[in-house]
Image: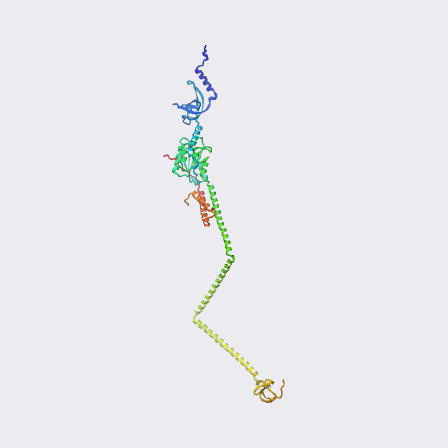
Length: 444
Length: 65
């Protein structure tokens, strides 16, 4: 006997299952990730699709009241993160997830794309160290490709202002976020290359999610950096973010400020360097001079050895003598010429003066002659008197007056007893006559 | 004013200093180089000192591309 009461209706079972599922607190609000397939957008705006992974799938519904909050266009193959609850639709007996929030599960997918592209470009040599160019040390123009409104351009402006005012910044405004960012960056890099003002380019963007930075992982931007003839510094995202653009660029900076520092020298350092060069140069020139001085001293010493000091002294002495002689000779030459001059001047005296002078000489000589004559006369007169007196005394007759006699024999004066013989006849002369006598004896 | 760029002037200064470091340099050459070096360093220093404000040019966007 069959008891029909023991059998449930399909509706009853389904109701029961629905109550069980929808009443479960774990299934009421769940977070789920999966890949979209069979995506359909209903005319009323609801989304119908299947979420799947390798081994399972589940139907998904997103009503139009929720779909407005979705910020991407879901399509086949998108990996998504959803929030929703499990519900059961009785007419079809199927359960599904009713989604209230949905976002792209970008990280996973983008990461895979990123890795694939990176690998491909690395293989093509886009990242070769050998093709990286040096960043110019003293740029005249720094081209900056970034958002005109963001903090990046401000940071770069402030940093360059602080470091190196000789540079000019050219801002090439670009979109740095969204679908068009990569193309916008490419256009401005290419434009900067065409204008060719800049010595270096900085491609920059502030921090953000991987999706925000995605433009820098897309080919337009990458290719433009790769092709740029002007060296490129990239400063994209935070210090920990590495975009493919960073691998392609000539230099990757962790932040825009760092990029500006890498692109510019510090002018305070340059000023210090310049002052240091001045010191260096002064030092070098001084040592060249010192070397010259030393060899000069050396040569001087050798010279001293070769040519003794006394020789020098001799020469000096000779020089002094010559100097003296020169003075003396000079003076005597002057004297000589003075004398000659005097002679000539004398000769030039007037005849009257000459006559006068001669006349005076004549008078003087006449007087002198008279004096001389008188003197001579006086002298001769005196002499005469003296002689007369002497002659008076010497006259033998005068002596005879005083009783002296002269004995003579044969008219010769006898002055010795030997002049006569005994019996000789002699004359004795007295003042008034003669006596004849005969010698009778001799006594000696 | 010299027509050379700041970088060229700095490079020349660097070369002058290098030349002066050569011990074989003749005295008159050294003095000549020294004078040039001082001139260059003064010029570079003045260029840095006289720069007062950073110029930022907005190049805009070329819509024709």
